[in-house]
Image 1 (tube, one colour):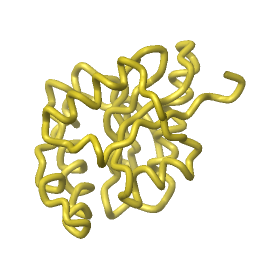
Image 2: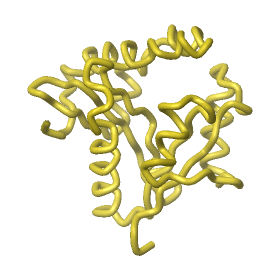
Image 3: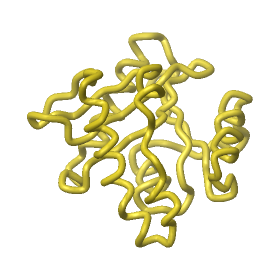
Image 4: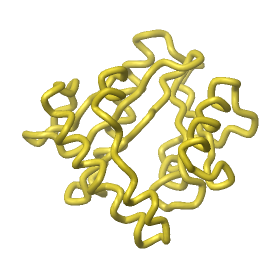
Length: 163
């Protein structure tokens, strides 16, 4: 499995991976999340996006620097390739990228109680943020404006070793 920067011509495929990876939300009574539109190509263009390719993209991650951390905007693994450590490898890749840029670690926002969201990230070394920075609070506010219930969301951080 190769992790490499996404090519702009792959963005529509990444959208399809995101849609497929959202299907399990139907089983958790969250059809509005499962049926939500994927990240737009315009938004992708403004982020750092990497793919896990085998040989074509099977998963992707998007991040951007926010308040001294690499903030993970999206991680999507196609269900046909789930539970193989691909998401964890993508997170580790972004953490290495962040370290090279002097960033303190990773942040993300996710659903508090969905098994492949906050509980998964905790297993990968993320911890809950009790008092979000103004930058993370702004991200949560933007998510709320898009219809995501802040009570179901959690901010998380993984600080790189030695920080």
